[in-house]
Image (cartoon, rainbow over all chains, first blue to last red; front, side, top):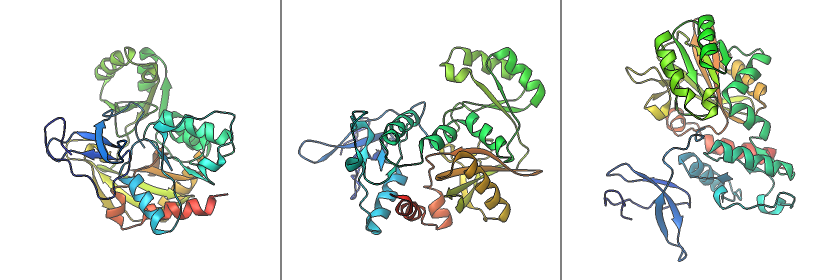
Length: 55
Length: 277
């Protein structure tokens, strides 16, 4: 998958899960994996850090 | 398991369930649309593991599920208490668990008065939040006034002035992963040189920490104080012994697993199998 920020190649994890956070190895931007209608994975932007995010 | 984004932890828990033959459904909370008076036991199974990254999302979803008789780990009261630093401190004090001296104020002027009681430096923390975000070191009256001035222009949550003494400690704290009151693994979180915060999210280094009797005892008490379940309990080594300064409700353990070799995801699955109805 191509990183929309830097055009780097983001590898799809073999055991990918919908909702998984993937990070571009070139620019470090994080994206969320989601399934398209054809069942294939694509990436979309995520909120970088929500004010209530955490552990 | 309900989630919103899948971190290393959620993936590891899903893999551990597969290994143990447990049918763990992964439900993205962002896809949930529930009628509050309907029965959802078939959809959500015998127990729900709550792993949302967003605290408000997790708290509200847990409330809705529990109201329909669905068992959630951690339960609503634990999430409410451990997700809020003030509520956690109050619960720890009530249970007699050693914790740093803490003050509460609602305006900059009274917060400055609080600091006269605590002394400088002190630490201002948002009552809700993680990873060291917006946690500020108040070195003196001038820096405190400057930081409080900023807070006046922020969301009301940040105008709750929860201030803790700055505990004299080594440049590290202890993160214990506690399941049902038992410490299953512990690490030192060693702060980066020049940074007083020990959050892993800020680059702190993980080192294996021995599980001593003192650590076991204080974590068991702290776990009981907030209501049990699966917790990440943070302690500081003060000159007078351990102090619990934080309890995490949806604890991360990405660094604890490789540092300690403990199969925390597997232990979480074992716990779920034990408590499911």
